[in-house]
Structures are given as structure tokens and as C-alpha cells.
Image (cartoon, rainbow, N blue to C red; front, side):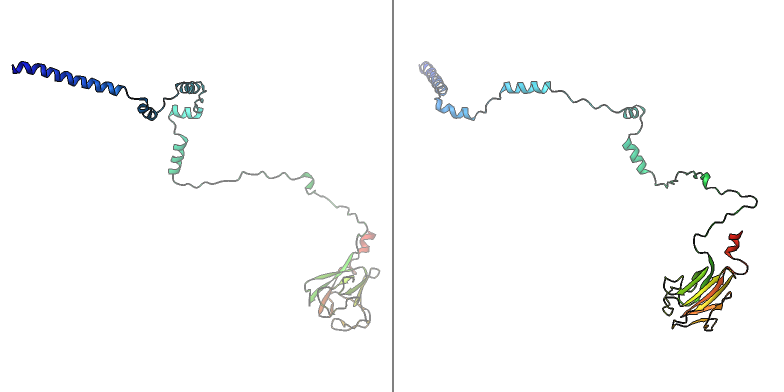
Length: 252
């Protein structure tokens, strides 16, 4: 009896438990909307499939950049196995330094101008003589002492004034202030008798001497006579004289 009564009681407890489970499941499926809204807000929105499809189509229609083809030189090096420029540069850097000699290109000598060549003269030539463009030189005064030593001044035909100023025909302007500025003396060459005369200017207070003598009148000059003016000594060197005169060339 006890075992038969226990069987229906156990089945009833099992059925009661099953009903409780189903009732609980029914309550879970009937959750109000207010409880579902927070859950829906936490779920991220689904992506726009139409926009993604349009972007994919636009990317597919874009032209592709042309592939850069290697140059002919690079292709030849790859075929022949030649080293690339970088490898060649590295190889050059590994080489020991060498000295290079640079020579300038040879320049051909310019051809001489035919018009600048010196003409060859044979036989006796006729020299043409015209008039003088300036007063001809008949001698010189050479400074052998005092300021301007080693310098010279030409003597011209006719009457020559001697003084420190540049206005004189023979200007002894080497810095000797003991020489009168104007006409301290005169030197005259006369082509008619081919002679030189030295004439002191007695109106000047500065003393003039000829061969250590103080002339008071005209004195004929001879070669290598020494004239002293102030602190300057001048030697007379004639060019014209008994052996030569410019008039002989004019007459010829």
C-alpha cells in the first residue's frame, strides 16, 4: 500500500514542478515595453548597407594608377646581371683614392697677321725728310748733383730760358728752391755758326757759375761744361755742333 500510494504522489509533484517552470517561462516572455526599451538603446545600430554598397562600386570604377615600368637601361642590367647604380657607387667608394691629372686642351698659336710682318729691305733706301713737327733737340743738360740727379732736360734750337718754373723752355723743376723761378740764365744755339752760348741773368740775385767761375757776360759752352744753379749741378752735352746740324739734313 505504501508503495502504491507513493507513486501517484510522486507524479503529482513532478507535474507541479513542470507547471511552475512553464508559468515562469510565460512570465519571462511577457516583459513590458518599458523594460525592453533600455535594452534596445544599448544595442548599436546596424550599418547602412546601401551606403556601403555605393562606396564599393565607386572604388571599383576609379582608374588604377599605371604601373611604372623599368627603363631600358634597368631592364638590360637585370637581364645581363649588371650591377645597379647603387652597387656601382658602393664599389667605387671601396676603391682606394687615386690621383687624376687634368691637362688643359692644347691651344693653337694664332696665325700672325700678314699686315704686321716686318718687310725685308734690300739695297740703299731713300729716306724722306719733311718739316719739323716740334723744335729739334740740339743738346741736353744732365743733372749730376743735387735734387733730380740722373735726370736731364733737352736744349732746343734758338734761345732757351733756364729756371725752376715750368714756363721756362728748360725747366729745372726737381725741387731746388734756390733756383730762380723765371729766367735765371739763357742758353742759345745758333745754327749759322753751330755754337752754344751761356748767358747769366745779372738781374737775378741768385748766383750762377760755370766751371766754378761766375761769368758776367755771354760765354761759349763746350762739351762737359758744368753749370751750377743753387744746389744743382748740370753738365752740358751737345748734339749739334761742327760735325752735325739739322740744317744739313734739310739741305740734303
